Length: 190
Image 1 (cartoon, rainbow, N blue to C red):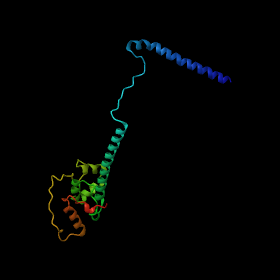
Image 2: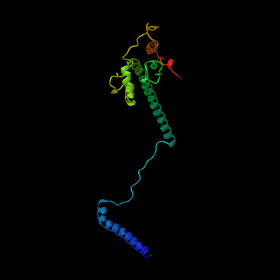
Image 3: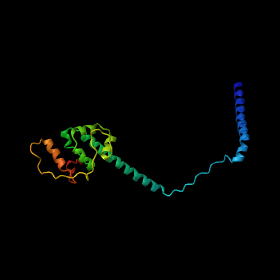
Image 4: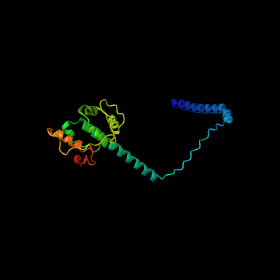
């Protein structure tokens, strides 16, 4: 009981001490507030008048989100397709679907040798994305993607040259169809 009375007395002393400190602070700072105009009042809230309704804002957000998702999905598909093709064995490359790869990058990809494909397969997704976009990618031994305006399509003979293995004939046919607009429809799975 005695301990409770002492605790209550200390609490009252502390509360009055806080009040005394606030009073002393106001006494010292009052002249400065009067001269410099620091009233300590609440700040005025900024005024905002929206020009769009919440429904319009939601529709715009959804459109932007869908566009961004489609862009990143196509990037992922192209990057995955390039990395799969580059890491595949020469026999499996002939049947790899390259429809997600842009035409200019597809031309460069199909004309690469095994060392360039090995370097491309070892590169990370960010470097492969830069390679697909035709930017400086930093992959040693891999040429940049050239635009089709710089390269001219060469008409290929109808039959592959004699003495080719089945794998070489398949690669030859793929390279022969590069100039056609529907060159990747034969290999499309779905």
